[in-house]
Figure 1 (spheres, rainbow, N blue to C red):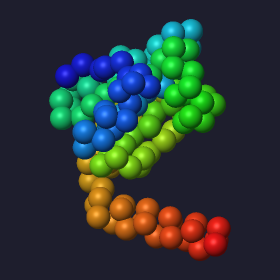
Figure 2: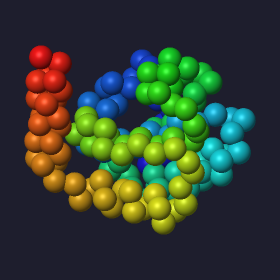
Figure 3: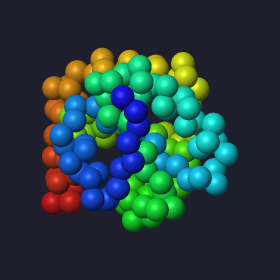
Length: 127
């Protein structure tokens, strides 16, 4: 599978309709982004069951602002609709493989329970 361009119009459905989604926030003028692109593309070919989306921060400024992107490239990973990883900076092939392996290995029942606990805690604090 190759990477796909993600826009505001299809972001929500992409995250909701796929188990694992990796999003690369990038810009054409960004040297580290250009260095990370072939690593991201190769990983997309090696993991056809995962959606690899690219969000051009110049074309999708509202998305970049909504996700509070302050540095590019930034990689975000969603599993089961939940953000489970977010990190700025270009990863090398081994680092990206490690992230993918870790995300595949997540116990999503445990993740959902932790999210629910945090939400309940916030509601209690906000009373």
